[in-house]
Length: 510
Image (cartoon, rainbow, N blue to C red; front, top):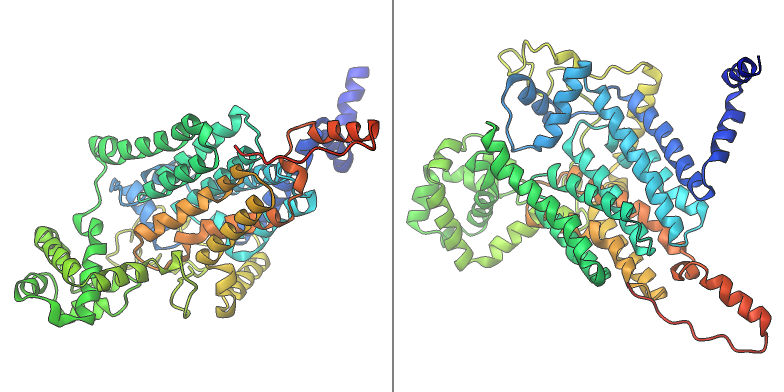
């Protein structure tokens, strides 16, 4: 009878008392991070329901077409394609994938909150930053996109949380494993991210030189894994490699920019090669927009011809580089502007609209690649509440106001802000290990500077999230870098000998 009454009582226990009892069972230091993760998940679920099954772009439809028609290619992240395929095969749609992304992001934000507390940030500020990430439309909706960049951003948040714990001298092996998992995510969810992981590793080495073995394992192993997959495993199992014209599109774009600005510096032999790929007028018009590769690579640019003449086109690129390096550097910096400069106009940063077109971005048009696909119903917005959907669209659209671009959508701004915040923290407290907090951001910025095809927000979305999360470090309490118990021992000594001067506080480095 007692057992039955206990079961019945637990079954009909009011939710609030039940939650309080569950919270009481948690260790005290875990209560705030768990609460933050749960609240973040609740907010993310509202975005998820508002745009159910998730926000999409042309790339999202491309993923679905590739994995459902056998056209697997490694020009996109194969690891994310696998997640898309699993979601479609298990559930018939994409809502499961985007839901898992919200859970992963919420858990990572709770982990970051715990790391900020370990660094001496007050609870209210450690909780406010993750909540801001999920409430602000530019970052809150990013976790529900069917995009490899969304998974990439979640991995970046997890890496930031691990770095926060390690900077606070929490040497638990768990944090190193989580850092390795995050670096693996960064390595497999974007093809050109090797500079990001290597740069982050170098920053971590500066911050914590004595931990070089662990740093090497957490960064070089994921990099080697990604390289092995891209150049060994994927081709071996029949996954197509990116086209040659995709690999060298950046070089072609450099040629176009130089030709548009200084056509007289090109030799006749250069022009002869270029004209076999596209009319010279197209090269010039394509180079007029130095920030985007797409205008050049579109029609009438002949991709097969470019691949056939790729070696000769690279000779043209090398000649122009030797004669006009200023133009080549200008083209490269212009294309990577989103990584280092503030936007000059509305077209510098492209933000994906919150709308899935009726023709699925051209794929379902008559004669399109997915005209008769049975997965077309999965590629549309189907929210359970029309009112919630309208509210979500309104909030997202309002955030796209040009006057808000610099603050809500500019990754370069938040990169520089993160560096200043971390430098202030390191200078205020002699804690070199705190430089680790800038490692992930520096890696993301360098990766985009090295190679980016256009000024798309998604390429620099992760630094925006990390910038928001770095803001509470401005309030970090000074004693946070003391070893555990040092403050209490020092306080006891003062009470025992009030007239004895306190010893000078020594700097601590990791």
